[in-house]
Structures are given as structure tokens and as C-alpha cells.
Length: 456
Ligand code: URP
Ligand code: ZN
Ligand code: ZN
Image (cartoon, rainbow, N blue to C red; front, side, top):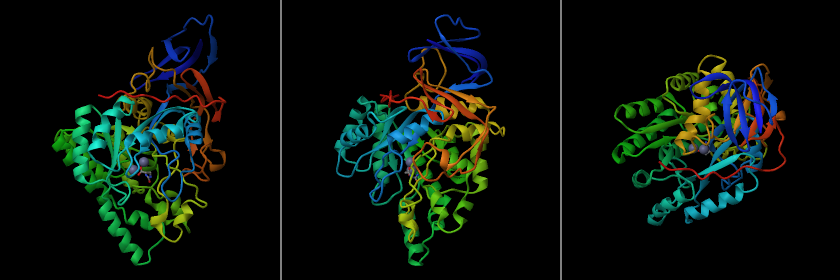
């Protein structure tokens, strides 16, 4: 048994000076001055203890067809635990012409014996038919209780409105939830053609061909289909004011919608696309970075309970040789950026320390809500007797600078180079075992477990 002693324990509603007793993988007691007999005592005074973070949106070991993500399950989950995230949910993806079962098997092989944190899968459906519809039940039995549909990426991942309608009818009937990438892929395709024909090939045209209105239109369309089917929907990586407005209007009509945003849409803006040379490619992601005003709107929405979770959409490609695939054509730059390692530190520093959100709100959006939304609560996402001892000791008296040179994620840049973090992730426990200390991995084995999740 061990006791973490002397910290301020933070959950989604309270911040209380307490000790936490851990037996095996579980939290067994929380309170002041716990009896320490027979326990290893770990002094963490001056620190906060928060629940292990849950990043509900990662892409590890993803083959895009032209290249493969820089992070696989080993480096991606090591980066996660170094930064205070003890659970990730990655997107298993159905290949065209294949079944969901085959997609799931492929992702289990990618993660098995490689994951340093606990993990689950959403299933991205790219090729709808009756048998895939039936397979959604089987996925639930396998613990995959959430799915994803893309309204963008024409010709590869994109599905049309009738697929969205049918999939939502099904998800409603089986208590699953579907996440949506909301951008109008058809219009994006036209805009990309238009600019490439004019020989406009630099990274900034990625953003110009994916304006906010194109995201807002898809969001509005999704809200309509959700209203018709009466199904719960989850909007992934919402990036702008216009999309948020569509969500809020739909909520007023009674649509059951949950919203995710990402650190990049809170902290970075479209000025990055004006950087010298090909630097803007580092920020080529979909949706693209928006304006400073959008950043502010999203922060306020978090504080006002209008956005429910913050995930990273970690999808890393090296600048050298990978982003460079699009040096002569922005549409060939692999989409995505790294972030899993820095989500907790960034939200603490730029959200809590600047009084944009409380520390309890931070826990809610990084830990508790993702657990509740995706069927992991109260095993994960909170600090309660009986919950997994996934605990993060956050020291607010230390600081550090984010640098590509000192990161764990296996990629040659970070979008947050030289950002100061006003904390250190001092210790991380995964089911009672210390797995990282001051950003260094302290466990030698990949002990992450696959999480079979519950449906609603
Ligand atoms: O640019 C991004 N977001 N890449 C990852 C795939 C996705 O759209 O989520
Ligand atoms: Zn997406
Ligand atoms: Zn994504």
C-alpha cells in the first residue's frame, strides 16, 4: 500500500487537502491524516493531485496512404504519461471494403504490448453497408461504444448525409455515441482545385480552402440530422465561433450534442500560416487554426459549460520528409499536429493560471467529462474510493519551457516551441504504479490495458 501525503486533491467539484491511500490498482481511502502503518509514504506537499488525464482523440500508428504518423502506440503513450494523461482513446479505422472487425483487430495489434497508458478505441466507419450496421452491435460487445464519421476528406474517409442518418438511427438504438468531423468535404475539394489551378500552393492555402463557414455548414447539417434522428452526437475538434453558434442554436431546440475542442484552437491562431518559407506546414491540420477572437470565444465557452471536453487530436508528422511531402502542393501536406504530451500543462498554465477556468473545470474537461461521455466513469476520470489509482501530482511551484528537443513524443517539432509551462508533472501513477516522474518514464514495461467501455 502507499499513501500520497499532503497535497491538495482536486476533482471536478472540490479542492481539498487530503491524503490518498492506494492498495494495488485502486484508491482505497481519501482523507486527512490517514493511518500510515504498513504504507510507503510519499510526501507530495505543495502539489495538486488531479485524476489521470483522458485524451479522447489521438491518432497513433496511422497510415494515411502516403505516410505514417511519427508516433506509434509506444512513443505516443509514453508522451501521454509523461504529460499527465493516463488514458487515451484512439481511432481504429475501417478500411474501404473491409469490416469493422478487421479494423478493430488491426488496431489491437498496433497497441497490444506497446501501450504505456490505458487505452480504448473509437471505430471510424468509412464504408457503410447493412453488414457494417449489424457489426456496430458486435463492436459494443468488444467494448467499442463510440464511433466516428467524417464529413470531410472526400474520396477517402468522407460519408454522405444518408450514411450519417442511418448510422445515427443505429447508434441511438444501441446506446452508442458517434463523433463527427464537421467540415463540408465537397466544398473544400472545389476550393482546393480552384487555388491549385491558380498555382497557389503554399501552406496558407490549406486554411484559405477550409474557411470557418465550411465547418459551420457541416455542423449545422449534423445538428439537423441529429434532430431528425433524436440521437446523441459528439462534435470533435470544434475550432470556431460560427460552429459553436450552430451547436448552441441546436441545443436550444433540444438536440443532444456534446462538444470537444483542442489546445491548438485555444492557444494558436492563423497568423502561423504567414510564417517564413514552409514553416506554416507545421500547423496544417483540419480544421485549420482560426483567429484570436475564435480562441477567446472557445475559452469563454469552456468556462460557461458550452464546451464539454478538450482532447488533442494528436496526429504527428515530422516536418522533415513528412510535412515536406507537400512542399509544392499544400493539399499533399499530411494533416495533423502533435499535442498529447502537453495538454495538461497547457490547460493549467494558459487556462487556470490566467483565471480563464478554475482548476476544477480543468479536471472536468480533461478527465471527468471524457470518462462520463465515453463509458469509463467512475473507474477513470475522478478521484474516488474504488476508482483506478490513476493520479497526477502537479507541482505548481516549478516551471519549464516546451521544446522539441526535450519532448517524449517522437516528432521533430512541437507547435508550442518555447511556450512556458507554470507547472511540472511531478509524478504520474497508472493503476497505482508510478509510471513517470518529472517528464521521464519510470516504468520499463508497456503496462497499458485495453479498456472495454460501457454503452449508455
Ligand atoms: O488534421 C487532422 N485533424 N488530422 C487528423 C485526422 C482528423 O481529422 O481528425
Ligand atoms: Zn478530424
Ligand atoms: Zn482526429
